[in-house]
Image (cartoon, rainbow, N blue to C red):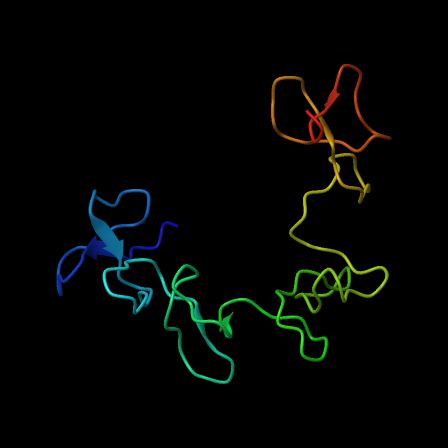
Length: 146
C-alpha cells in the first residue's frame, strides 16, 4: 500500500511512511492492534453482534468471527463467503453453500480469452499456473501436481 500509516509505536507525531518505505521497527498505526499482551498483530476478530475488533487470528477466543470479511448468508453458517453471481459485485456464500453457477471472483482463471476454467498448466520450472488443459501451450507442464 502506498498510503502512509507506519511510524514507531508510541510516537504521537512525526512523518508517516507507506508500507514500502517504512523503517525497521515501524508499525501500522492505522489498524487497531490485538488486545493480547505483547501481540502487535492487527486485530480482526470479535464476537458476532459486537462493535469493533479485539484479537488477531492467533489469539481469538472460541466463537469469535472475522469482522473484516463477509460471512456466508446460509442460516447459521459462519464460514467466509467467497462465491457470488458472475457480473454482480460482492460475494454471498461459502464453497459448501454456493448455488450452482456461482463463481469465486478471487480465483485465478485461464489466461485464454473468455475461458473461465481454473489454470493448472504453466512453464516448466515456474510455479505460476497460466492455462487450463484445453488451452495449454506445447511444452507446458501440470504445475499443480509437480
